[in-house]
Every structure is written in structure tokens, then in C-alpha cells.
Length: 383
Image 1 (cartoon, rainbow, N blue to C red):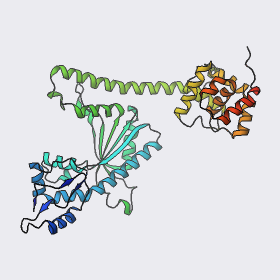
Image 2 (cartoon, helix red, strand yellow; image 1 turned 45 degrees about the vertical axis):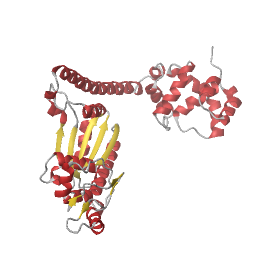
Image 3 (cartoon, rainbow, N blue to C red; image 1 turned 135 degrees about the vertical axis):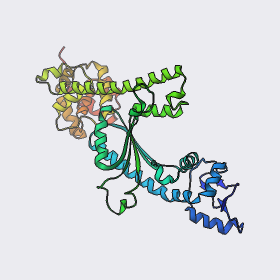
Image 4 (cartoon, helix red, strand yellow; image 1 turned 60 degrees about the vertical axis):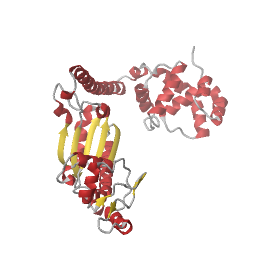
């Protein structure tokens, strides 16, 4: 069988007539056979099927193409499973991540790779048919993520790319793992996947940004770059690494600050703090221990941003506001139901006391009617 030079290629489908029979020249019957043999797969491909390298590949190794197509769905399932296990375990550990993504190697990438590199056995030598990437926020979480990977998967290989750069080199830093599914994944669903390898890449947000930039750089090795650009690239790589360290330091400093305002021996110390997300959170956890603070960071930040415009500057101001509006809040809950979030008590109290806040914060007509009806129950602030 040989590849037709005039391959019929329409958008996403490689049509039946990839091959013509060398003996009978009959496109119809042979094409149907070839479609069945290759699995009749739908491919999203930008491969130049008329290039000499690809022609040779189809002509000499059609079984390689067929095996890839037959295995592709299996690798899609594998990386889906690995991503699910990894994301669930990381979330359960309380580790903050930016994203977990996954992909099975595309047909384009496979053809490009095996025409560029001459593999004896591509299905043993290529290790990234299935790939998962975890992008996390803080460098110090890498040990916990490493423990998660080792406890959930069989780790065949682990490479820290930063170690390969040397102390004075620019380049990509991350940790790459080759894994198979662990002992806890058993049953018919996993029988075909147990021996298949998946690559997991673990990197910080800034390492991920470097990888995106690196993908477009001409210089893949330091030795390729002229000296003046080498200095700039080394400086940039150093800044990225320094920024990762600073993010860790800022996180540690914030955790220390939150601990100091949460565990104060004298409650007056918290009341004298300036209003910000952390002090309000600590205050509401003390004030309403049985309620969730807010329905998300955006909700909390929005209310704090609004009340900061109306002469509420310290936590003591919020404590006094809630005390003055206590009876009015009770009437609000009688009409609208119990408030679910601690921050909602502050928002409702401010709306009772301040007409401008009430008009600028997205309340509906029914809520405004309640505020107007019961605003007289708010005790006037002492002058």
C-alpha cells in the first residue's frame, strides 16, 4: 500500500482514500478496508500529509499510525483519571492551585515527533502520550504535592528541571514525574490503564509563565545566546525565582498577621485594628462563630470596599454599628429570613444607617422598603 499524494483532507476528517491499492487501483473497496484498519478516526490535524517525511511514515509504518489511533482514547481516559485523582487530593490537602490541566498527545504532535526523532519503538520511548499539569501558587507547597503524587501513583521517574539548569543558568524550572496508576485504582474501569504511563508536570505560576515565554524564545540553550542576551535572560530567570521566594515570604507574613489578630488575649486589641479582609474575617468569626463569613472572597471584598467609603475605618466602628442596628436587623430577618453570612449583618446594618450606602449597593426594592420602614430603630450615633 502507498500513500496517495492527493490526500483528501477536509477540515477535521482524513477521508477513506488515504491509501490506494498498488495492485488493483480500486479506491472503493481498498479505501473501506483501510478506513476499518485505521479505525476511521476523526482527527484535528495541521500535519502536512504531502511532506516527504509524512509520506514516508504512512508508506513504511502504517501500523504505527494505526496503533496510535487505537490507543488515543485510552490515553485520554488515563490523563482524565490522573487529573481527577490529583485535583481531588490537592484540594483535600488544602493546597492552593491555579489550575490543573490535562491532554492526550494530539495526532499532529505524534506525527511531528516521530518524523523528527527516529524511534525504534515510539510507544515505549515516548513518555508523554498522556500529560497532566498542576500549576500551584507557593513554592513551599511542593513537598506536600510531591507526597500526594507518591501516595496516589507509582512513580517511575522524577526530574527536577531546576537542578538541570545549574546555579548560573537560565531555563525552565519545574518537577516532572512519570507515573502509572496506584494500587487504589482497581477494577474493570482501570484494567486497560494500569500499565500506561502519564507525565505529571508540577510548577508554580511563575514557572508556568517562564515556560510560556521559553516556548517562544529562539535560544533553548544558554550556549545559543549571545553574551548581552545571556545576561538579560539570566537576570530575568533570577527575578522569576526571586519573585517565587517573595510570594512565599508574603504568605508567611500574612499567616503570622492573621494568627496575631485571631489569637489576641485582649478583645480590645482587635477592635482597634483597621478594617481589612483579615481583621473583618477575624472579627466575624468571633462575633458569629456558627456562620460562614461570606460566600466567597469577592463577596467579602465588595462589602468591605463599600463600607470603607462611609466613615467606617476600624473594627470598633463595625462593632458599634451592629450594636446600634440590632433591633432593625431583627426586623429585617423577620421579613427576609435569617442572614446566612457574617458579612451580611454588616452590610444590612450599614444599609439601615446610611441612605447613600443603601442606594449604591445593589439592594432590590423590597429590601429598600424594609430599610426605610425600620431605619428609625437604629440608635443614633453619639456625637
